[in-house]
Length: 241
Image (cartoon, rainbow, N blue to C red; front, side, top):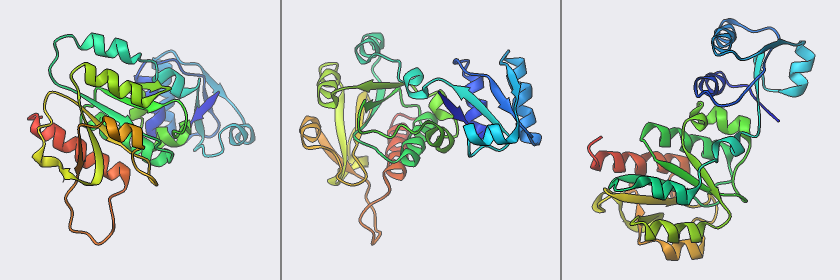
């Protein structure tokens, strides 16, 4: 059982029509009262609780908290092979593969960019990934409730399945070729490696090419969530979106 406390996270969860509730309310301010109205309109139960009880259940609350089941179970509900089958003859598709992104702030920020730039699916490993529901929900500004996600026990095998389905796989790496030199139209998957060690060796071997964001800075690289936003924008730009 988890509790969402961010205003945007609660709002988007309710709007997504995915299972949630009750909405716990202690001493809500004006913004929280708007969420109570939204929850009521969506037939979500409202429970009044004491401040002490709410602080115990959801320490970061601002007078309100939404109870949800394991948000990663409910969002990572897409079967990858079914996703591929459902593409049919669709030519353009964008998949983001997260290889051991362990910082929930980065994970959430990446989901927010995926929502903004229309990623069709985000794939992460069942283990060694950030799974702090409230932080991811807050950082993604609620995008976790909208972005299609799938979990897999083996990212390497999943990459092989995508390649068999006609996807070109690009790994983000500082030693790669400039991203804008690649044709990112069609079925494309972008691999983002962990904050510390980058893309794992076996997954790197499945990549068709490594790509980078050209920069002039003195610091080694961009934060992975910032890099994700730039890479996703370039895909969107090439596709004329």
